[in-house]
Image 1: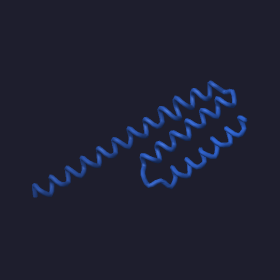
Image 2: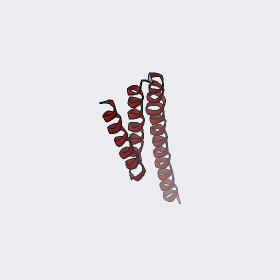
Image 3: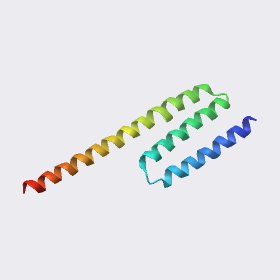
Image 4: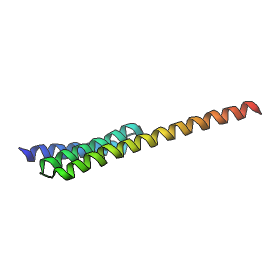
Length: 93
C-alpha cells in the first residue's frame, strides 16, 4: 500500500515540477516548488526517515518558499518604484 502512495506522490511531484518549469506565473511556480518539497517530506515519513522529513518540511517547503515569496515581493516593489520614478521624471521635464 505504501508503494502505491509513494508512486502517486512521486507522479504528482513530477507533474508539479513540469508545471513549475512551464508556468508563466512566477507565484504559481513558487507554490508548485513548495508542494514538491512538501510531498517529498511526506515520502520521507513513509520511508521511516522522520529527521529528514522534518528538515525537508522546515527548510525545503517552509523557509525556501518564504524566501522566494519575499524576493518576488521585493522585485515587484522595486519595479513599481522605478515606474513611479520614471513617470515623475517625464512630468518634470
